[in-house]
Length: 310
Image (cartoon, rainbow, N blue to C red; front, side, top):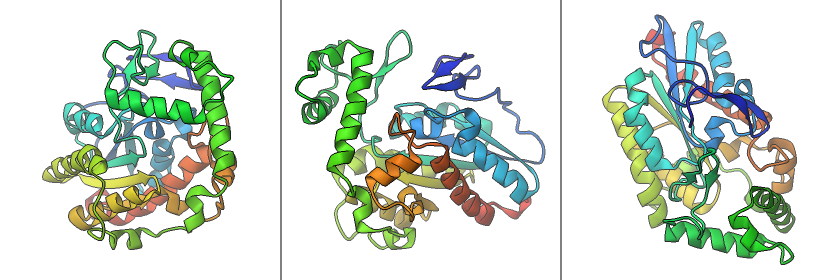
C-alpha cells in the first residue's frame, strides 16, 4: 500500500506507516518487556471497512495486555487481496526483521487465486480482459462469477471500466447469492478443530489448495519455527477443501489452528451470518466477528506463550 496515508477508505479512517502497512510507526528494536505479535493475511487481517481499533489485532492486543500483565504489541502486515505466496514474501522481507514472538496467519477462501493488480489510484482489480497481461486463471474465474451472478439487464462490459457499476454488481451478486443459499455452510452443523485434525490423509487435498496455499503456508511455519517464533493459523472457510487443509496443518505441523466458522455456534444460516457478522453493505466480517476471533486467539496465546513472556 501507499506509505504515510491519512485518508478514508472502505468507509473507515485509514492510516499507514512509512512501510505502507496499516497502523502507526513500528520500531525495529522490540521494546523491553513486550510480547510482539505479527499478523499476516489479506483484507480480513487488514480490517476492511473497520476502524483500526475494531480489527481483531487491536482487540487481541487489549485482551492480552490484561491477561499477560505486560505490554503486548501487534503489528498488522495484512494487505487487501494478498494470497499465501505474497504473505510468505512479506514474512521474509518485513516481518522477520521485527523479531516477533508470535505470527498469526489468516488463511482465507481466495488465497489460492493469483495476485490482484492495483491501478494508479491504489484500487485493486481482478485481471479482467481489458488489462494488459491478464492471468488466464483469473480471467476465467472472473468470467464465471460475472456470468453466474450478474442480472441480464446489467451491461457486463461496464464491469471492465466502471467502479460504480462494479460496486453495484457486487451488492446485487451478494443479495442473489444469499437468497439462493439460505442455509449454506451452516447446514452441516459446527465442526470442532479437534475433529478436523482427524480428517488429514482420509481424502486427497485438492491440488490447487496444496500448491497455492498449503505449500507456502508450510514455508511460513517452518521459517518461523527455525527462529522459535510461535505460529497460530486462522482458517476462514468451511468447504471440504478447507477441512482437509486444517487437518494437514494440525497433523504435519502441530500448529494451533482456529477454524473461524466453528466460532459461530449461534448462527443458523448464511443469511443470519450476513445480518449479524458482516458489514451488511459488503460481505467482509464486521467488528463483532473480529471480536470473536480476538477472544479465541487470546485463549490460545495465553496457553501457548512461553512463561518468560508472562
